Length: 297
Image 1 (tube, rainbow, N blue to C red):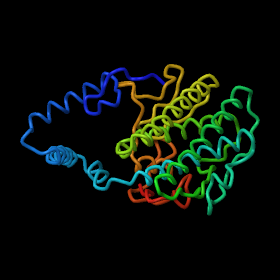
Image 2: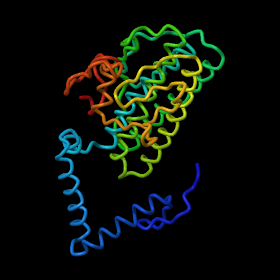
Image 3: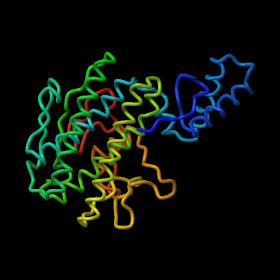
Image 4: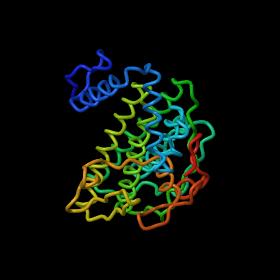
C-alpha cells in the first residue's frame, strides 16, 4: 500500500494525499469565516446545512436521521460476507464455514450447489475467494467483539433464490453479482465508520480486496462469454467493451445504502425486476431476513 507523503493540516501526526489536503484547506478556510462560532457551534452549523440539503432528498434525510453504531454496521456487512464465503467454499471444495465462524445459533444454508466441476483457472479463483471471504468473516467477528459488540450468527441463506447454481457459468455470474453488491455496501457504510480510523482502515482494506475480486470475476465472465445481469440500475455488468463495473461518467464504483443493498438481497435479482417494498424484512437470498439491528429495506 502506498504511503501518503503530505502532512495533515488537521492532524499533524497523520499523512494524507493531495486531494485530502485540499479538502482540509477548504475546511479550515470555511472555519475561519465563521470564527465567531465555537468549534461546537461550527460543527452544529455544518450539520444543519447538511440537514437542510437533505430535505430535498427525503430518502437521504431518513437515512441520516439515525446514525447506526459501528458494531451494527459491521454486523450488517457480516451478513454479506456469510453470503459470499459459503458459496465460494461450497463450489470449490464442497464445504461451508466452520461452526465457529458461523457463530452459535447459526442456520444452515439451503440451495448450495455443492462442489462444481470447474476449469483450472476458475477453480483457482474460487479457492482464493473462499480463503479471502473466510478471513473477512473472521476479521469482522473479532472486530465486533473487540468493540464490545456481539457478532451475529449466520442467518438462513437460500442460494437457489434466483435458480439453482449448477454450472461454472452460473457460479461466475452469481459471484460477480455478490461481489458487486458487497463492495458497494462497504462504500455506502464508510460514512458511519469515520469516528474510528482503525475500523475505517480495515473496512477500506476489505473493500480493496473486494475490488480485486470484482476485477477477476468480470474478466472471467467476459472471457468465457458469460452474461452476469445488472443487479440494479447502478450496476454495470462486464462486457467485451467494459471489463470494469464502474460508472462510465466518473469511473467510480457504486455506493449503496443498507436499504438499497437489502433491496437486491431480498429479491431484486436483476435491474429489470421490481425491488421489495420499503420496509421489507426478508426475502430472496435471506428468506428470514438478515441478522442484526439493520434489517429493513
